[in-house]
Image (cartoon, rainbow, N blue to C red; front, side, top):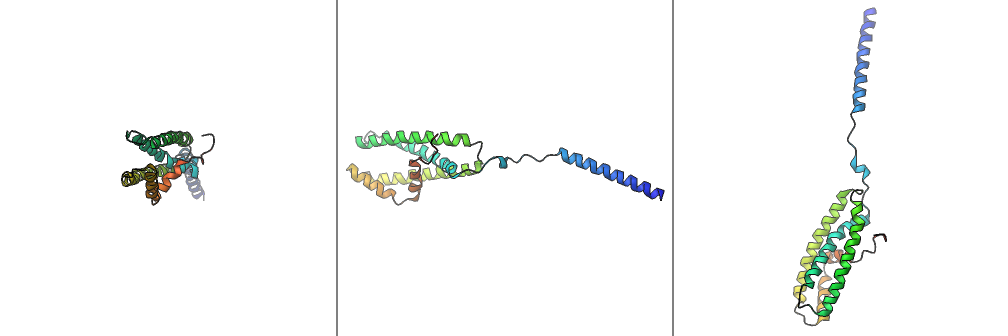
Length: 174
């Protein structure tokens, strides 16, 4: 029996030593930190702000381009100048809101919303250029505005983009 006990003791001490090494090695190997758990999911306001940033930037560019038209009637130029200034203000508010959140919010949703905003901004530009060409021949300013409004009513992209004309949904401190 002495030999069996000795073998068992040697076996158990070897097994315990192996288990001890395995446990100490396991304790030293740590999984990589889960970075997704620290970033919170974007809110609807975060996503809307990310969507509207490229849309408003596009609006600023379109208005700046239209203001370069020397043949633009004075009343339309005044309205475009006011819209341009308002768009710059909206752009600043959107940036003040979204930029601090970039490192805190899961970026996948923000990137998707921003990409959708860029696509819609490009489609909006194409659509409005088509409406402008269609209505440009109208000499009367009021009839031209009415023609453009009627042309724009049929587009879903115009509706989505126009939602960025009012950023009152942003918190007041931005």
